[in-house]
Length: 109
Image (tube, rainbow, N blue to C red; front, side, top):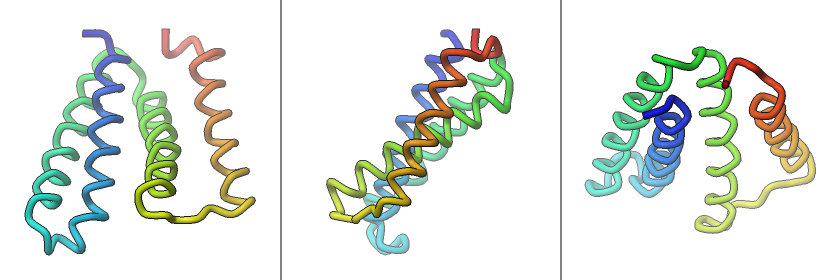
């Protein structure tokens, strides 16, 4: 499986794990706590597979950047967490960074 596919798995697993982490209420709720631990294990495993063919800096930048954007969107929808103008600008800059890496960097090829 190509490195970018492993990275996509890692990102999805991390987003699920982080969403469940909020629902775990400090690891007081069993099912979300198990989902959190499992999700992070899958995320790091997927990242390790992606790093077999992609540079560590690219993997981490994409994993964290895309994860931040997705978690922010999920928190806005599920938990009604608000984001102010500065936050939206920051998210926009993160998205711009992800696009620059994907479109212009030869390291992801």
